[in-house]
Image (tube, rainbow, N blue to C red; front, side, top):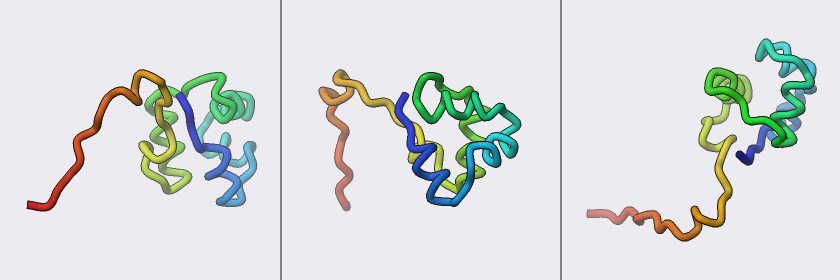
Length: 78
């Protein structure tokens, strides 16, 4: 799973240590999430979204070649 945790954390001027403490996870765990070596559990993902004041779907996303083949319907005004 791809994510924008590091970019958003740095934009808010937070260190890994300070964000990890707010999330109640180790700095190493946060580092693994930021480098996409690990995906967070739902509870941690929601805490990250809360602390970074960003919707979870704008932080975490799946980048997959198969996903490109799936057409998403466009919304049109009625």
